[in-house]
Image 1: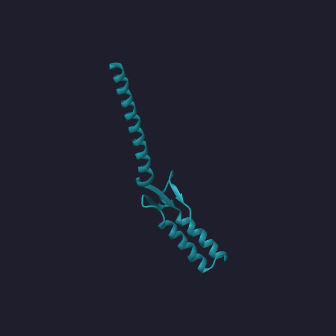
Image 2: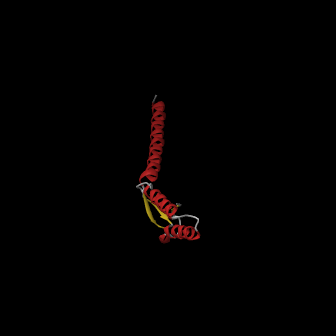
Image 3: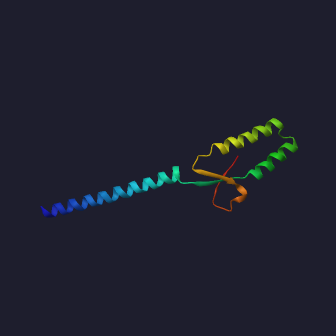
Length: 100
């Protein structure tokens, strides 16, 4: 009877440890995905140079230029609150780049 109780006790400790590790891993994943701040770079300088070249070559008109700039603004505004948007010139490496 005493041996059965020891085995049962070990089983409960093992179940508790596994459940605790599982809950901790899930908590870390959720925190990282939804709450941890992340940096997103936007290459505004390159985008503006591209738009300028298109405008000067006549491929887009005033309305097209305005539409493209508004699209970029909507894309930046749609970035989740846990992501910090900075200019692409300030990023050296390992940052997500928001493509307009």
